[in-house]
Length: 365
Image (cartoon, rainbow, N blue to C red; front, top):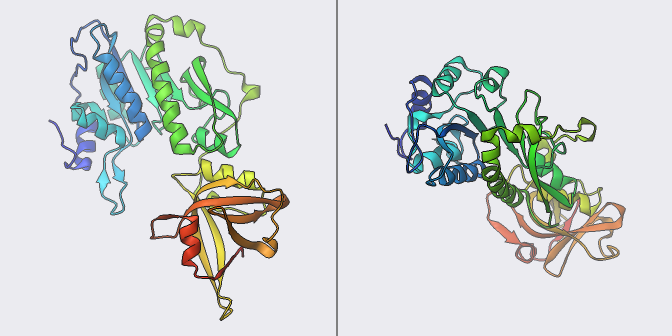
């Protein structure tokens, strides 16, 4: 049974979780000798990894086939809260992957789900931003283990938000790691990794997409070694003493505090781009009537001012210079805001926003 994009995603979840799975061959020339692989992922960046696996499995000399997909349950994603499938599930359906081989358990330890997974007899599981903790009874199923694609150089930035936390810290280098999954989060032996320099203007969604793209190629390259067991032998244990954590981001972190240095705020804007975004509270002062209005604005794009001082910004005044709103920050630094958004409005550049003030003064609270 194929469910089109317009079909009920709730039906998809029920159908996938409680019916016995059937075999699906993703290769052009399927063979019983091919390794059975299960992919676990949820967001759009995970869909890019799944696409790489689909393409590789379709090659005439492919060693494997994707026999099932595991992803987060359907949820309300759009403004109208319409319940839709995860990007990975939707991508699989668009590729013609059987809906009864797409599993969407609330938890990866559900017995019905584990029973269906065991029936498929997968030899390897691949995870890429799945978003669910894998219990030991899951990890014991595939004889070749479970391998995770993680967007950091492990053991750095273990956790839910490695790219965001790395950008927030202003790192100059990051990368992607391929590691065996163990019960403790992101602590398994590392099979391979790839490093890359970080541009000081790149934002989290773009860096995340780039890392998963590179990670997909790394995964495809390492699959033969994983299948023949040599990857297990060469995998290096992580040095726990060098580990850093990347905890999940909360919406309460979105506000900018201008008593911090400009570089700290700039890195936060880059890190939190997409979700939850970064917000600033400003005061609009009508000099004629002396009336004041508080306005919350979403900060979209910034850069650190090249000026040596912030003359003209005394008293928390926000000025305009070279197409940027100049916000005074801690330690006599300044943050230049190039793009911003008023709630309910479209993103505008600094000049357009400034012109809309019609001579009113802009200040920090």
